[in-house]
Length: 123
Image (tube, rainbow, N blue to C red; front, side):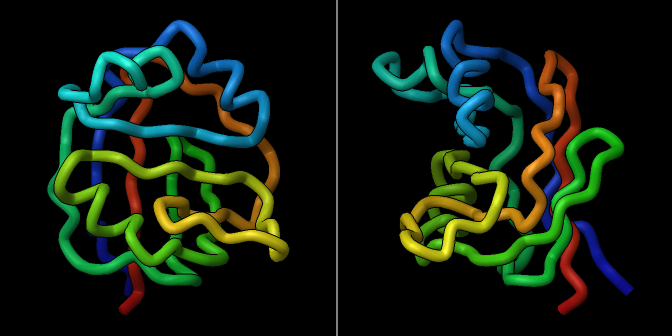
């Protein structure tokens, strides 16, 4: 049985965040994102990560389900401390960045104010 280990809501959208999403990257940051990064981020309201994100876990964005293919080695710590991680849609096996969670699926969701993002783990 999967358990929700992270649950947050988008509360602010940077003016260039959609262009990053169009390039298969969803950049999350807590509401205290540095000014220099705010334009490219989707700001959310929670840093409480309960557990570790691993390959095979599920990311739910509103009602769309994505499967985690790979987790960069600092993605969990930056998500839980400063609310930051990047979701990359479509697993790129050539290069893995440390703060990125790679999702197997490539279909890009619509992200708007109020979008809910949940991460569920079966471990």
